Image 1 (cartoon, rainbow, N blue to C red):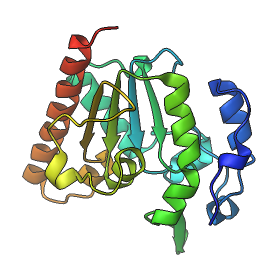
Image 2 (spheres, rainbow, N blue to C red; image 1 turned 180 degrees about the horizontal axis):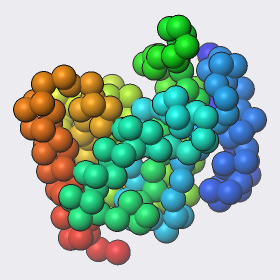
Image 3 (cartoon, rainbow, N blue to C red; image 1 turned 30 degrees about the horizontal axis):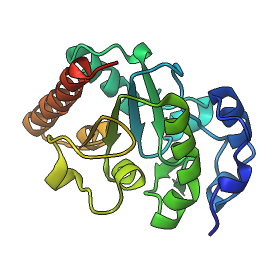
Image 4 (tube, rainbow, N blue to C red; image 1 turned 135 degrees about the vertical axis):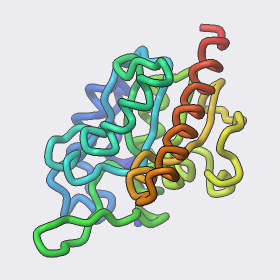
Amino acid sequence: MSSAADFLPASRSLKALREAAEGCRRCELYKDATQTVFGTGRASARLMLVGEQPGDKEDREGEPFVGPAGALLDKALAEAGIDRSQAYVTNAVKHFKWKPRGKRRLHQTPRAGEIEACKPWLEAEVEAIKPEALLAMGATAGRALFGPKVKVTKDRGRPLESPLAPVAAITIHPSAILRLRDHDEREAEFAGFVADLEAVGAALRGAAR
């Protein structure tokens, strides 16, 4: 499986990248997806949030984090005192990977080759934004940004060294919280997620512009 590098435009503006990504065919995921779901936010955003891939609603609407996980992310950001409109939000993989079950489309985790194939788009977004803080949400985003050695279980809650941004960290994906059936466990994980966002926000406030 080749990468998306051949589809990258000469310009690294977000507008040019978004338009070029619509035609990317460097992995098979585009065949079953409704559309490419590129990142959204300001080019001047200091914080960049990276998830795994679009979900069902994101695939239909063409925007990242507009489904249930996005609603939970919005709630957590609000509790952490972070304005989502000031952040750039994207995913490591730009097409929805799914399998049918009746009338539903069930999320499927992207394979390593699919993550690597899409990586040039994510790298180009980082290059365009030049974020001061970079937060990977979930294992797929962590692998795409920081490599396979960084794990949510062992690296969550501590600052990471990365050439991509002065502040770098990894946390769980909000969809992982939604999958928890036990109310107390879900509340505890949500509180931990908010704490991770608060830590990034505090580090961002301490970073020199």
